[in-house]
Structure formats: C-alpha cells, structure tokens
Image (cartoon, rainbow, N blue to C red; front, side, top):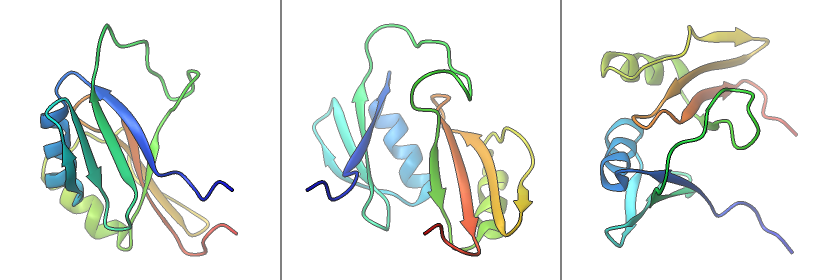
Length: 124
C-alpha cells in the first residue's frame, strides 16, 4: 500500500546553496547531506531532495508539462508573506484570497515555482 509522498527531488546547479535558502527562508532543516545530494525537511516532515543538476534547464512555465510548483501550507499567511517579502523573495504577483483560500506564487533562487497557501477549510 502506498502511504504518501516521501519526498520530491529538485535538480540544482548548486544543491548546497539551494538547501541553505530553504533552511533560511522557509524554516526547513538539513537532515542529510552527501555533498552532491541534500535532503531538507519541513516542520511537518515532508522532504525535498536537492540533487546536483546536469545539462541545461528546459523551458519552464506555469503550464508546461511536468512538475509546475510546490504548494507550501502555512498557518499564518499574512505574517509568512510579509517576512518573505521583506527578505527579498521574488513574488510572481500579489496575494489572492479566493473564498477562504489565500495563496501567492514565488520562486526559489533556481527559479522553481512555489506557492504559499492557507485554507480556511482543508480539502477533504
């Protein structure tokens, strides 16, 4: 039986730098580091594996085929958004509040799309 998603991998030209960004900006912790591969863990236990990339990056757009973004659940949207904005994080627009779902898209230093999300009522 499949229990869930254990981690998602992101290829980066500099895994150490990208892992530090997730630690410093988003509160993840490094829980494994081989030098070429770094695992970072969020407070809820979800993990990202940051591996050393090879080759050129394919064109990225919000609707191109493949993984498009990682949604990061937050318990205080406004505070988290303000903190990230004041630390220089690049946002792809203004926050949206749609029927009790607050969200905003942004990128990490490698250009991967992320978004903050806070739902008044969780999905079933």
